[in-house]
Amino acid sequence: MPAAGGKGFPLATRLYKSRTLGLTLGFVCVAFGMYPVNPPLWVWVWMILNAFVWPHLAFQSTLRAPQALRSERRNLLFDSFCGGFWVGAMHFNPLPSVTTLSMMTMNNVAIGGPRFMLMGWVAQGLGIGVSLLIFTPAFIALTTPAQLYACLPILMLYPLALGWICYRQALNLARHKRELLALSRTDSLSGLLNHGAWKDHLEIEFQRCRREQQGAAIALIDIDHFKVINDTYGHVTGDIVLRQLSKVLRQNLRVADLAGRYGGDEFCVILPGMPLNRATEVMDALRDRFNALAYAQDPTLRASLSIGLAPYQLTHADSTSWLNDADLALYEAKSSGRNCVSAVQGAWLRSV
Image 1: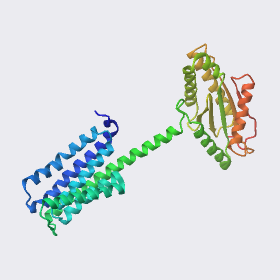
Image 2: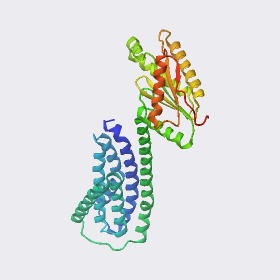
Image 3: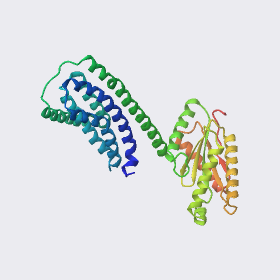
Image 4: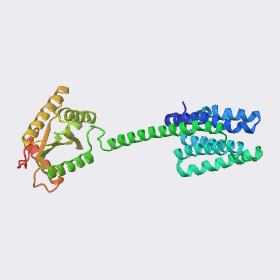
């Protein structure tokens, strides 16, 4: 398939379906409007080609076009031109004419907004002008009951189909927006929250603790001598170690706990509603599991963790001061020989 197929295929498919349905229903509407005029044979042939052959030609042209949107805009303008042509050919029969022009305008607004709607009106006007040059100008002021019923299918079904297509497109756009938001808040290497997203959650947790008078703890985790691991075994091995730690965090924390990559070889965890003694046990068990996993993968790779813990305290002025306590605890863990958990001691407002 040509290069346009990758990006143009969804757009071409959506418009192919709507165009096929719309022109099929429109054929019934226009045919009943044209019949009393008694047009020549070539007009009927052109109506059939426009209704049943043109949708397939338009679809294939968009698939092969280098820019799918530009191609479909041209196709829609041609649709509008043909719509105007049939309005003039029907001698402006009120209901078939309004139905034809309004359905074309609906397409143009859906794909290009007000500016493209105006371009569509210009194309419709050109179509009307061409029809007036070919056919004797006239005006049929009365729509017969048969013509009215012939217009009902397109008036009922086509807006429903177009609305469904727009609805599906809105769902896809909402899904893509959620995915992009998740990517913007996720660290690509570890799959955990990135620095900014984790700090946002820390602020939320700080405000919750202050508002609800609930306890919580945060942990800063550092991989000991990570630079030595990178220098000795290479950055690929270093990335593997980072992924192993993120895996251990996901597997050994609660659903409510929030883990993130703070930067480099430093990770961070929010432990809502967890008292300090329990948080110390959890982090110490996590440290043991990581050490065992690293040793099982490569006994020569002595990867270990230093962890600093800080509980929420009433004396914290903001989330930054809370985080500073965890950073001091991490510094203490490193100063104490690494591969250990160090916790800031402080009074809990309430033990959970």
